[in-house]
Length: 467
Image 1 (cartoon, rainbow, N blue to C red):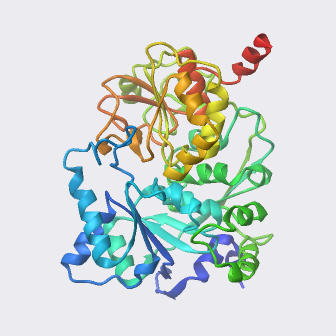
Image 2 (cartoon, rainbow, N blue to C red):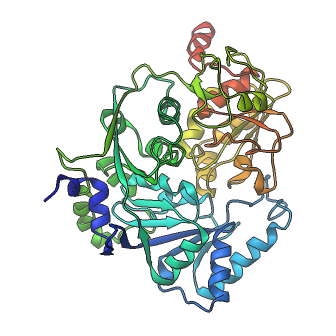
Image 3 (cartoon, one colour):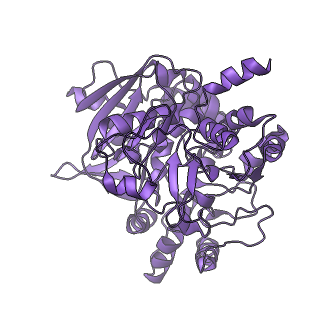
């Protein structure tokens, strides 16, 4: 038997493979499908128009997140021009097909990649697809999860299978211990910056090593979330006892009488020692600085105390209004955004609140926090985190994707400089001509307080002066 069969990815694939074609592609059984109103409603409508049935409605979970109005109280269902068509189509088609829908006012509502772990929809060892590129997030639990298009979503709904072309495998071994103010977001940004945004194209990434083992589950979700920004098909992390503790008792997880058997299966989902990968990266995180992007791709990122590279992408520099050799520290920001499927979980809000406690956002800075799910929002409010954000001058919003992307109906103004916990800094991503710098929630919060891109490590000195 080849060593290649002993990786985590190969085990997940083998356990779901229906058949393999001559070219090496696998037809894979899909355990669960998640849909949201932007692309899921299209897939459902097309399927209905073609007269095709959904083969296993009980395995399909739907939410409204991308264009949901996140202003307090949700005065409208969506601010996206014409967006009500998507929402009404989602409601009509899910009702007709008998699918579960977590509607705007449902306590289970939230960003698809945030609620999937929260509700136990994503589980170790399952296959899960969603017409959304950041579905790779869910590999952090040991699921084989990847983003698909609407056409593939139709196929998966109608057949409960999908064809997966043969993928290369890359292991990223994270050594060392993260410094206090550096996070999983900084790790993945540093990796993309060092190796390029296309380095993992055609690959499945497995994150492993002591730094991964030390991460809590929500940090691992952030790490895998940006696997697609590295170009990867998806990313996975072997489930461990932290994963099992996190999953146990979740609503759509195993029934109590099946949990022990599930745990036994989950513990078997790991790459065997000596397994072969097509490529491997060993990355020491022990001296990693908080990272901030300077350009219009996640690969255009440096340590917050670094400078914009000389001879860098002129188009990106022009868009961002920067010059080679320019320091990022001290660059004034107009707005600060904490949200998105990358960094809007309870742990993200706790860390940002720890920075904001007793402080105020700088005058003239618009600061917005959008929890990733209604459950996260309510949990944060139960801890009083909302009061900390509000007292600091942040808007405290309803859950949803919000201004992570402009197509949702809201965005930041032209040429506004945004410090953002989102995953993409493409041109116009957060509004026409908006200039997005992606960073961790801590860096976003501290920069909002300072009114400029700031090094959250300086917070320690600030705390010492105050004590």
